Length: 266
Length: 285
Image 1 (cartoon, rainbow over the protein chains, first blue to last red):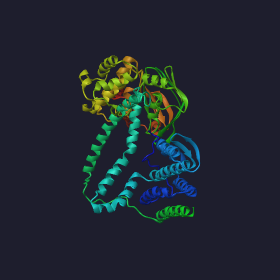
Image 2 (image 1 turned 90 degrees about the vertical axis):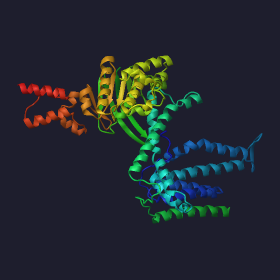
Image 3 (image 1 turned 30 degrees about the vertical axis):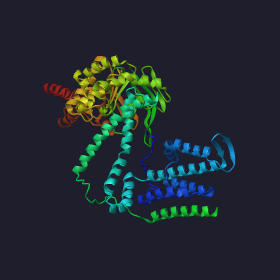
Image 4 (image 1 turned 60 degrees about the vertical axis):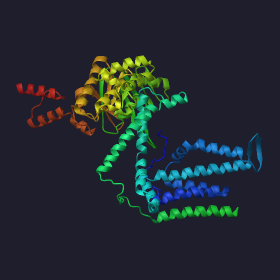
């Protein structure tokens, strides 16, 4: 459970930590699109270099990023395997029934793998270096135009920030309850699938109970402090767009332009 | 059952952040049948010490010997299970581990995990519910309908049901009213006295330490700086200040009185009763 780094903030003082959350959010979304621009090997190399640069600048150890990929590794490998086995074309190395291993398939697999992993790495850079509250502030700002269509943007962002805020608590609590049940002789991750599911009951029931309680307490506290859903709220933390944020956006633009140019050259 | 730690070092990992050396080469022997209080400032490694004794954290270096069982790095699952059977660990706010729809089922969880039959577990449940001072009508109730103090006792009953020889408790009184606190501690004293159960108690409350424990262990920054009788612990107030620890009220009163009146009371008074007796004695002279 401790291995999960989703939604965990890694305190630090790096350049990336100090970027405006709006810049980082836009960067993350843009990067997902840009990753698909890499259409040939030099483009792929550029994509990896850019990702590693962002990771290095974040000041968070490489091993932490690897941990971020780990929960998804089977999905990635499965996709890669599908590409290798089912895409034909180019030089064929092995042919066996419906399966073919071809140069074209391997190439596609490398591309898919690279896109997957760079996207995960890059978005992990953003989530690791941005406090959840800042992330929601950024998100709220970016969703502002939706107000025109009567989307309850502020309420949504409040919900998201509460949900994000309690992820670490929930994980820590899960760990604590698992330890407590272990102390009573429970063994996790052993036996048949059915048995493994059964032993989760003593974890999830207390977890649900405490989450519901906490939700109710939180609602009461918010009421007491005068929270009203429909009220216009000002923000305690003001976001400031600085020069470095513009530079980071330009860097992304340069990456996109570079990939596009490499595509045209090839 | 005796506990013997030799050169135990442990790290603690929460999320991505690893704190090294929460326990720093700990040597500790807790005698069988003793009642020991573990005190120390927050973050001193008290909870980690408890987890090592229960095999939930394995030592990086050194080993913990519990009776015949050895907990060390790479200990196998069978040993750990045996350790957990012998050593009951009551976590802080243990009521958060309650999950079953009836009190009885929750209490039976431990014994069933440790290989008791359903019938045996029910017998044990009926037995331990009495030991924590609740009657048998509670067995069929939903644990979520109980009061805070009752829930706490049900949770402790769930640990007792595993029939441990050693009971570790991490702040068992936190969040209970004074009556509830005394009740839990009186129960502990009784088990210690009547069944010879070895009890290790983590607490912040020096009055409780003074009244209930025999031995005291002071843990500061992962190191044991004191291990002796409770009376010795409270003899020298200057040392306690260094460790960020309070004095029990009676002892504090005694020291102030001695300072202002210049009269020295005989001995170190740990409780109001001892203080009263000492005052009477001095008054007669």
